[in-house]
Image (cartoon, rainbow, N blue to C red; front, side):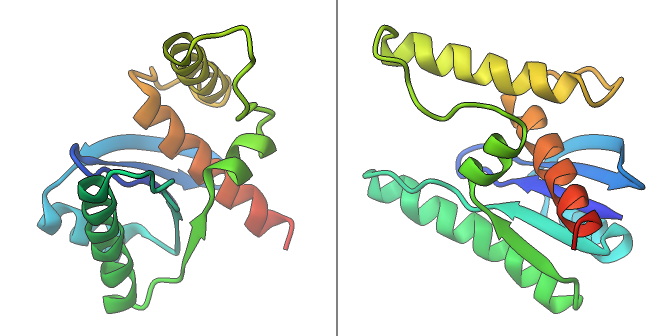
Length: 150
């Protein structure tokens, strides 16, 4: 099984689990024991979003710690993992990452998140509740596609 992860710095990580190109389930958790069980018992390969690290030092540190925990669990259990840039999985699904000049930052962010949710919803019958679930799902499917084409 493939697991796609959207790491969270100030909120739980979001996980999508795929098998044979089909999304089986999506969940959020910040419980390290549950995350350990998920990775050690389900994963054949893990795709982790390589987060954009902005100028806020506190966010940078939290994201680095969160991603490091996930990488550490993969290494602990000998599970192969790959870091995926947001621009890679988004462009794969035709989601633009450039803000149109006519939109404010707020309106762009809202539209961008909705584009991600809409694209994810095309690929599953699971109700997509927010952008984190959508991102994890698309990261997972990006990984499945990448493995199928290698």
